[in-house]
Amino acid sequence: MPLPQGDTPTLLIGPLLRHVDPVSATVWVETDRPCAVDVLGRTARTFRAGGHHYALVVVEGLEPGSETPYEVRLDGARVWPEESSPFPPSRIRTPGRPGPFRLAFGSCRYAAPSTVDLDEGIPPDALDAYAERVAAMPEDQWPDALVMLGDQVYADELTTATRRWLGLRRGEPVPEDAQTRDFEEYTRLYAESWNDPQVRWLLSTIPSSMVFDDHEMIDDWNTSAAWRREVTATDWWHDRIAGGLASYWVYQHLGNLSPAELAENTTWQAVRALPDGADAEPLLREMALAADRDPHTVRWSYVRHWGDARLLMVDSRAGRVLEEQDRRMVDDVEFAWVEDQMRQAVEDGVSHLLVGTSLPWLLPHAIDSIERWDEALAVRHEGRLLGRAAEKLRQAADLEHWAAFGASFDRLATALLAVARGEHGRAPATAVVLSGDVHHAYAAEVVSPGGLSGRVHQLTVSPLHNQAPHPIRVGFRIGWSRWARRFTGAIARAARVRPASVEWAKAAGPYFGNQVGELVLDGREARFVLHVSDHRPEGGEPLQQVLDLPLTDPVPAEVAGIPG
Image (cartoon, rainbow, N blue to C red; front, top):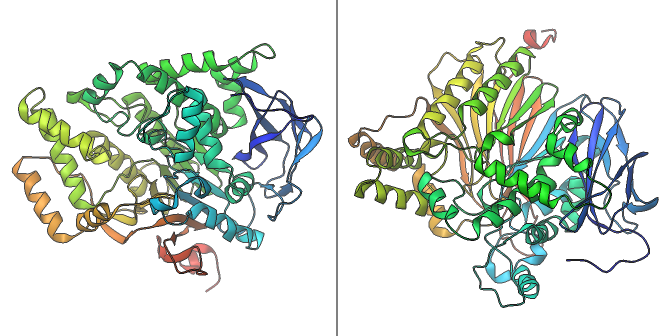
């Protein structure tokens, strides 16, 4: 929807500081018209998609371990930082500085607080509160990276303001359960989510890595083969998935790529090759529909290199294999790539291997058992009454985490255990799975099999800005209880369900409320710090630290090279 234009270009969204390595960075923006975007003397022309204008500026030639304040200029006019901003100047901080590496993470952010009705009862936005906290800190304590583990926007749960906007655009009233239809309507969601001042500054200053989960497309996205058959038979799905994946590519995925990956990305190169003024939306729509039909056409997974730490972000939504007799969270080609990246990280000598996946690998034990039981019934009785009942339960209760893809759960376990045993070289101190989705936070650790040289953890943090209704809170508390574990385990054993290939124990949680996690890495030591924002008395602190959990044993002095 065209916007009124003044004499100079306007910055609509951004800047977002995205991929940062020791010598380069990328900065993403959306503007109100075609223009030249300048960051630190590097210039990129905008490209057009669906009547919107975007640019990704690649800044190279930076120094490792450096801090470089930057401005954004559109056709030579400075538009960022804003003159009245109360926040510190935005800057690019490259890896390589001495001291701990701090990684902030979380998932599930339902719009910005200013766009959400108060009567919805959602606790204060943890990401806004975290941004304010960071801005008040000394810069050497700022996080080095921000990892967003899915549901950056909610295409199937719209605010009142967006429903009103849809009514104007569509020329008809829209119901309370209205959902987005196409690329243009998705652009509204990102503008609504990323333009509150606190988050805008945070995203301009802390490099962000992102991945989708279901709500970026629709709840239950790719739950099962039955779900796919139902949704692809509708007359609205193709526009929905095309708009969802095309907008995800523009707003999130493009910034996940390094300069070298951008140079090899066929879609990005095709967009750049379009004539001036040409609209890239048809090209992106074709890419999105092809990716939905055949996941091999696009790899949404990627790697971040952070010195002693490496993040392997795994797509656990778009690339699923859903045939009931051969269910896989990640197909064999993609999983082989994941395993290769794990081996390479160990060979490169990283101290901490981080695996990002929007859905938790290790769940509360009772829920894990129920998901395995449901999958076994659905597979064993496919096409029959019991199988159809299991499928209905699967969709109604969202039983589609790693535990509901048992073969993939075990394959990931095998890969992580091989890393932790040192089968590919010196074991990292930690192998940590980072996840969101389940609207509570917890830490769990693999306790069997033993004989591991490194420790294997699951850290789950969700939501950033949403809520877990009371029944959900009760359910997750019960899910971690011993009696529920025994009860659901007995049900699974009675149905001859193969148990998980590893055993784990809860180390902390569950915690509820809006929350941001931090992973603090210092040499071979690691800690999990959790901040929670919940309803509080007027004038109370917006964000409370509720956990500081060591994930590694202290490094002995002789190993660290410190005289005894």
